[in-house]
Length: 385
Image 1 (cartoon, rainbow, N blue to C red):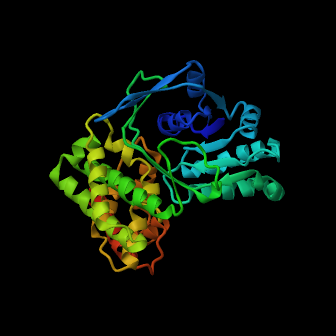
Image 2 (cartoon, helix red, strand yellow; image 1 turned 45 degrees about the vertical axis):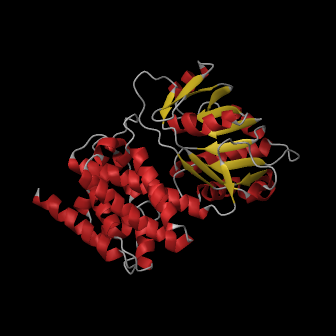
Image 3 (tube, rainbow, N blue to C red; image 1 turned 90 degrees about the vertical axis):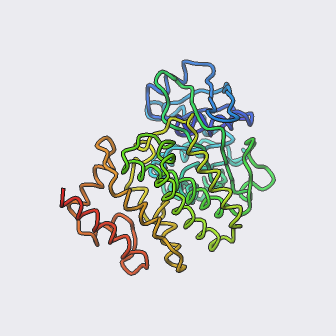
């Protein structure tokens, strides 16, 4: 069995690639970073270090890497003969992945079992997005090529912090992980992924993860950055920050109960587990790393505006989530392009225009005025500096 995984970075090697390896797949990593591809191909094995209580070291073998930029033909051959294709590249990069998958499907035997495609991204419906991009890239050949694959959405969760210097292709991760996968697209032939669970309805799992793990992680980063704290674990050691993050997650849990009928007690336990994971001192993770790309993180269907909008539509409170958005507006990191652009937009756009364009909220939405007020407050602070 063979799996092709797009994105040979830390998540690709330390989470998706590891579990594919443990499922018995030969793993082919696809990436455009020359040095990373060369480093992977220079070793016969690498180690995934699980840092924290219960963590162990896991060895990965039977892998190689392909440079999709310099050798697209090799990637096409790998996809044409693969059983599984996965991605961990970021939702905005899926449109660049799609043509490579189309090329592989075109070379794939029509008699082969369907290629099992799963986008493992921090986004709702990422595989649906990838399928749409593949359909567009295939053009008039879509009707012929799309039946050669099946597509399943997933919800993935594992914290992979910035890696220590000199680690090579080894990866440090937390012991905890979750990988939920839509069951129906695969029928009675699901991929072999140890530890993954296949579910009939993925929406509750995706939103529970996105609106708890991602919301909580980013909120910790933005409140921590505001307080001048460097590490995520240290931010949650601050009682005020911990209370603010907990309040935001209580609001997202209320939304999950209302939208999906999830059990409040189970969600309370889940929130506690998530916060304990963030407090793991063995994971040296910084507020700057977790807070990067703030424009994406305050967009319409993301971790703050998404659940806050759902709360407002149901008459539920969203004040703590708005407070997290306000903290995100203060995130100012000259090394992060989106942070630089965020601060530029705050200085050049009116509060109404900024809110509409950046968050994607309609001015008539019940959440709009509260977000606009937070934007205006940040702009007043900037003008006073």
